[in-house]
Image 1 (cartoon, helix red, strand yellow):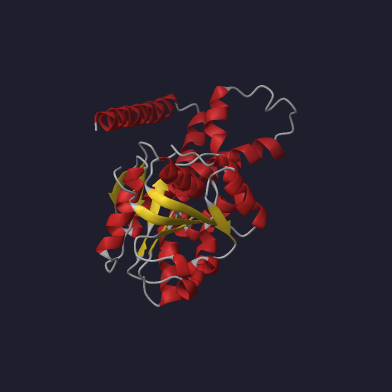
Image 2: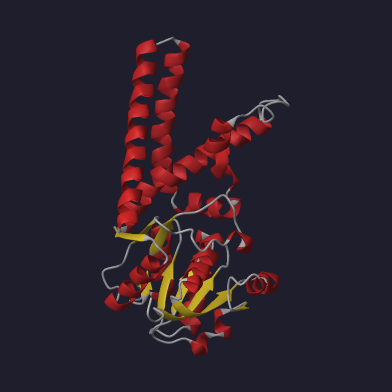
Length: 304
């Protein structure tokens, strides 16, 4: 990159998602300076010491006067905390500054923006990186987290083209593929493909830990259990907020899953071999197609 894409990149919430974007932009020379905003002073200190940000403060108000066109504020806090950050944005930040976010639910952020500003401000670009880890906090920052991963942007009808272009280029600078869809479609799709699997993983681990009274349950668990339940180590506060924010879509996916699980239970109880084989075969075929699709996409990204 011949010259930095962004002047000052301000990350509000210096955890896995925000910290990874900050370090990714820094390492690739895509911004002049990274500034962190965190609620706890000790988080600010640690983020600077680890090189995740160049400097850090506990309020956007501390640096608001420095921010102008060409600067980006990235909101990376738990979903239900976005409203309070947007209130700070309205109070302190110039309309020239590009604002974007990484929340996993877009409908709740859209409603928060309408509540705070009266309408979605043109400078705000709603987005969601489809990447993550079971790790959390400033120590989890990974500059390569977004390489070959997708980022979904859900711009409003009045989103300013300049800001949309800047946010798109920002994500591409850290190796991400940028897609666009409506807020409604995003929340429905992610409710099924991301939020439901987390519900299942959390519930399974809690069931085994709390309800099956056998001390050897985890001692003899193998790789399949480890791989399937990895996401149950994710940040509980973040996922608590996601469940509340995307309740309707998640409940719809859960109801469908529960219905299918009930039918599967019945087929096992009544030794319905044909039904069992059909479900397992369909699932294997679908999973194999998904794996092939991922491999083809990765190969295409490497060529590009």
